[in-house]
Image 1: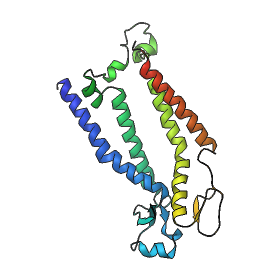
Image 2: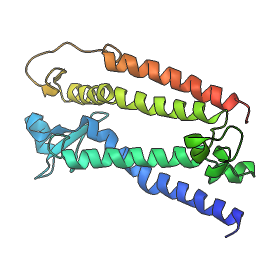
Image 3: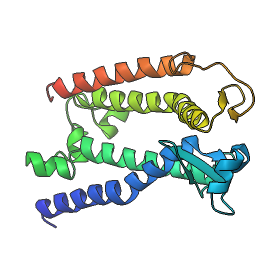
Image 4: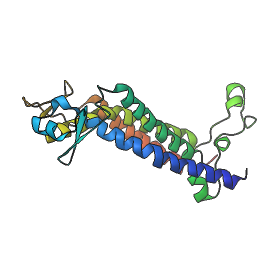
Length: 223
């Protein structure tokens, strides 16, 4: 198959993954963060939901049924959705960093996965390095930056999830209990700032370092 045809196939795969899988997964995963069990809803809210609805979400003051249930009610489905979203992001990042698909069509000079490494018989190739090849100047920075950004997202995930849940709880007329992770319609609880926990602060540091690594890698000269 010609190189141009391969580029078109990779581009089509990227577009299909983003439109058909990644976007639906994201718009399912997002509301799932704030989905609350119907048992936490007020009588007026319960009356507006269809029969058999396991959970509900609030969007700009509008209550809607969320048929997948809460994270507690359906943990397998929730983590499957999160894993699918993460896999799509990883696919887009990997194909983009290795010069496949849209990158190669825009730049006209595809950088295949084999081009990311100096051949095994290159300078200094001995033992394990000879087998794997020596990484070019910019690739360690790009790889480290992408890894740190993914780590930052994972560390920030619990805080963002709690923030979504707190907003939904406030819309429902309650107060979110951060310690119990539930919406309390009776008592008031203190709010917790987004970057007040160690995990969110560490996520901020990892994100900044990862961004600087990506910039450093994009400016590095190819070996």
